[in-house]
Image (cartoon, rainbow, N blue to C red; front, side, top):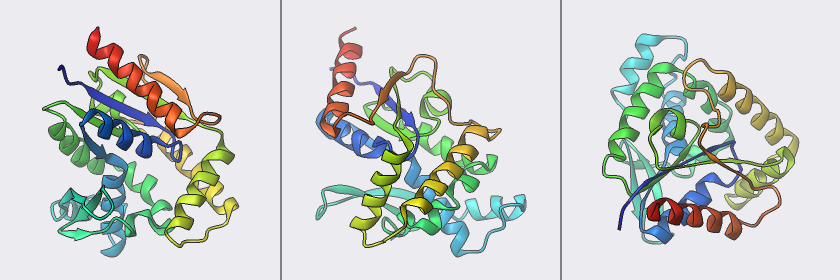
Length: 226
C-alpha cells in the first residue's frame, strides 16, 4: 500500500500530538513529535545557561545535542531522549513551556531541527506534528492538517495534562503562556506558524478525540486511493 507523509500543524493544546500518535498507531506509521524536539533543545539551553542572544554559544551548544525517540514498553508510547537521558517529564514542565517559543524562534535552532526532521521523513509512512510541518518541513506532504480550538478549551486541556503529571498550574497562567507562545510563533521571521493553503482545517473545540482521529484517517484513505 502507498505510504504518505501526514503533516499536522496548529496551535498548542489542540490535541495535535495525541491525535497524531493515534493516527500513526492505526496506520502503523512512525510518529515524530517535533514539539518535543524543540522542548528538548530548550531544556538543554536552560540547564546549561545558554544565552539566547549569543549566536556563538547557540551554535556551539547545538553541536552537543542529540535527540532521539525510544519506545517505552511500560507506557506503550515513545519517550524523548536528550543525550541519552529520558527527559519526557522534564520537557513538559512549565519552565520549558515558558521558554520554548523563544528558543524555537532562533533561526539556527530551526535549521538544526528541520534538517533532522526532513531526514526522518525520507522513507515516508510518517505522521509529524508541529508548527511548520506542512509549510516548511514537508511542503510536499500528501496530507496536511491544521488544527485549532477555542483558547479556554486549549487552556483547560493543558491544565489537565499538567495535573496528570502532578503539576498544579493556575488556568490564568496557562492562558497567558498560550497567548505568549501564539504571538511569538505566528510573528517570528523564520517559518512562522501559519495554515498551509492546501491544508484541511479541523476545529477540535466541539468534537471528541475519536472524531478528530476518524476525520484524519478518512482523509488519509482518500489520499491513498486518489
